[in-house]
View 1 (cartoon, rainbow, N blue to C red):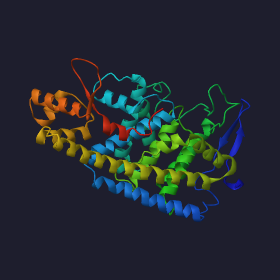
View 2: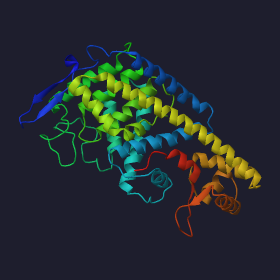
View 3: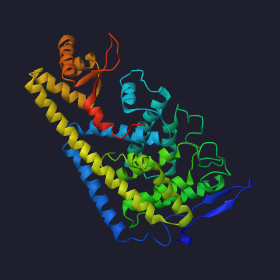
View 4: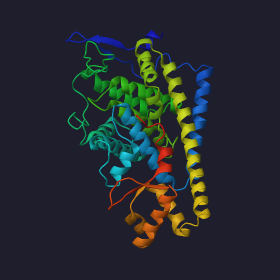
Length: 383
C-alpha cells in the first residue's frame, strides 16, 4: 500500500464521503519491475505492428472506419447500450434498423465524437475545452442529451449498482467544487513534455479522468475516447485502430477493481499492467482480424473465378463490399458505372454464392449484407 499516493475522502454535508485524488504523476513514481518493463515493451511492439498493418490492407481508410464502428459499439455496450454492428450499418444505409433507433444513435454519436476528437487534437494542443465540445457531440440528441452535454458537472455524482445512492455507492467522485482544479491539473499533466513513456502516461490519465468523473453522464465513454485521442496525437497510431473497449468489456470487473485499487491502496502498478495487457491482447487480435480479411478477399476472388461470375465487374463489386458492407442494386449500379440489370444479375449471383444476404425481407427496395466481412468485424460485440 502506498499511502502517500492515495487521495483523501472528504465528508460532505449530506453525510457521505467523496474521494479527491492526488494530482499526477504518482508520488513516489511508478515502480518499473521486470513484469511492467516487459509488458510496456511488448505493448509498444504490438501497437507498432498494428499501426503498420494498414500498409498491407485493401482500402485501409475504410477498413479503419469499420474498426472505429466496432470500438464505438463496444464502448457504448459497456454503458448498457443495446445495439449491434449490423444495426449501425443499417442506420448508415438509411434503413430503419432492427435495433432500437435511440441505442444506435448513441453509437453513431460515438463515431462522430471520435472523428471530431482526432481531427481537433491532430492540430490543437489538448485541452479540457476540447473534451467538453466532444462530450456535447457524444450526447447530442440521445438519452444523455438532457444531462448537460459539454458542461462540467456542478452536482455530486456517484458510481454503484442500480438503486444505490450516495451513501451506498461503490465510489463517490470528487465534490463539484474540486472538479475544475483537478481537471486543470490533469490538462497540465497531459500537455507537459516529460519522460514518462506514452503508454504509461495515457494509462495514468485514463484512470485519473475516470476518478474525477467530470460530467454528469458519459464519463466512461469519454475516458475511453481519450485513450484513442492521445495515441493518435502522439503518433503512436496513425489511425484509430485500437478497439480497447473489447478488453475492458470482457474484463469489466477486473477493470473496475483495478481502478478502485488505485483509490484505496495507491496501487498504480496493478492497473498499468492490466492496461498494457489489454493493449497487447487487442492489438494482436486486430492484426489477426486484418489478416483474416485479406484471406477472405483472396478466397472470394478464387470463388468468383472458379464460378466464372461477372468478370471484372464482379471483382469491382467485391472491392465495393469491403468499403460498404450494406448495399442496394442502385448503389452497385452507380459505383460500378453499369446499368440496373447487370447490377441486379451480379447481386443474384453473389446471393447464390452466399457472399450477399438480403436483409429487408421486402420485394422492393432491397438491401444486401456482406455477411462474411461482418462476421469477422463484429466478433466480440455480442451482448
